Figure 1: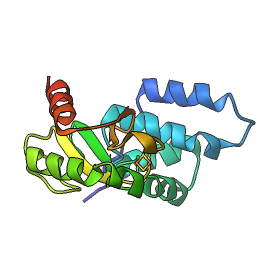
Figure 2: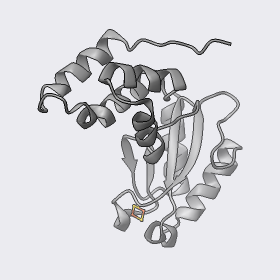
Figure 3: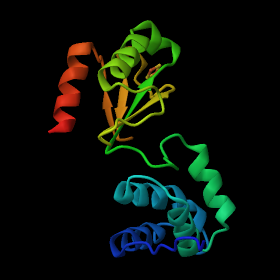
Length: 164
Ligand code: FES
């Protein structure tokens, strides 16, 4: 079977081009994280075809793109739900109830860590410190929105908001 070929959208290419102007000629690697972020924002995850399209557009070896996409936990290299929720499980959050929040989310969503709900709405991850250690439990929604002091009630409100 022939591999799927993908072309980056006009909006993503324009954003990458604009970002690239901030760096000296030949520094395509400097915009790689930016490019992957924009593609993931648009598509929801980074498929093999998307990684190839980024490599082609930046004239980078595919392996270099793979290295970055697989190194950073914010990048999803497999399909995920409409919303991702990452629960901090590092020690300070753990002591503030991070494990309680994670268990509550697992029960509420009916999935284990790394799984996606049947309706495709949520994928749950466990993560490490997100830099707000004094305000645990901390969750990161869609890799962009930090939610702190996440009691069960606040988790309920968050899920309701995300589903609306
Ligand atoms: S330990 Fe959870 S944000 Fe730092």
